[in-house]
Image 1 (tube, rainbow, N blue to C red):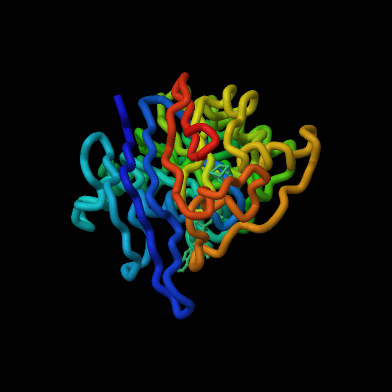
Image 2: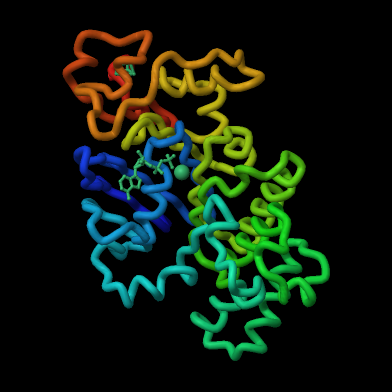
Length: 313
Ligand SMILES: Nc1ncnc2c1ncn2[C@@H]1O[C@H](COP(=O)(O)OP(=O)(O)O)[C@@H](O)[C@H]1O
Ligand code: SF4
Ligand SMILES: [Mg+2]
C-alpha cells in the first residue's frame, strides 16, 4: 500500500530575479513502513519538496501536480483539513532544532502540544505523555528536563526532542530534513540508531532528506537522487551504492571520502536559468549531442531501478 504518491509536482517561486523552479516535475512513491532517501547537492530543491508535502510554503508559491496521501490529494484540502494532517498523520523533523523550536516555550510544552491538539488530552496528561516520549528518545531525567527551554538543551538533545515531537502522535509518515546535520559524529550515530528503532517499532514511513550518504545507507530502503528540481535516479539502497547508473550519481558517489574523493566538475545550475535538454549536460563527461536539446525521460532498467539519462534510453 502506498502511503504517499507524488505526481508531476512543480514548485515555483516568483522572485525579483525571475522564476525559481525549485521542483520541476517530481514523481515519487513511499510505501508502508518504507524509508525513502532523497539525496542531492545543496540547493537542488529537497527542502522545498519536503515543505510542499505539508503545505508549509508561503502563499505566493505556485504548486502544481498531485500529492496523494493515502489516496487523498493534499493540495486540494482546506487549511483546516490540513491542520488535522500535520503532526498527526504526517510530521516533519526539521534540520535545525534550535531555530525550529519555540525559544520561549519549555520543551515539555512543545512536546506535549500535539497530544493536547490532536488527542484532546488535558495539559497534565499531555505533559506525562511528553515525559514518556523524552524517555523514549533517551533524554535523562525527563520529568525535570521538560521544564527547561530549548537553549538549555545540547544540540544532540534538542534534535532528539525534535524527533520526540515528530513521533508524538505516531504519524504514518515522517519527513525528516537533514535530521543529523550539524551534530557531532557520535551523537549523529545515536540519532540515526534511534530513528531506525522508533520507525521500525511504530511502522512509520519516512522521507529522509539528506546529503549524508552514510546516513542514507544506514536508514533507507530506497533512494531517489535529485538534480535541480527533478529525480534523476531511483533504486533500492544497495543497488544505488553498488551500481549507480546516472553520471551525476556516479560523480556524487565518487566525490565521497572512501570512494576516491574526486570532486565533481562544474557547479549546480541556477534554478532560474536551467539548461535546456538534460540539466546535467554542462557537467556530464558522457554528454551526447541530443543531451543539449532533448530532455531525457525516466527509464526503467530492471529491478525497479530507474534512470533519467539517454545512455540507457
Ligand atoms: N521562498 C523562496 N523563495 C524563492 N526561492 C526559494 C524559496 N525557498 C527556497 N528557494 C530556493 O529554492 C531552491 C531549493 O532550495 P532548497 O529546497 O532549500 O534546497 P536543498 O534543501 O536541496 O538544499 C534554492 O535555490 C532556494 O534558494
Ligand atoms: S542524458 Fe546525456 S548529459 Fe544527461 S546524464 Fe545522460 S549522458 Fe549525461
Ligand atoms: Mg535543505
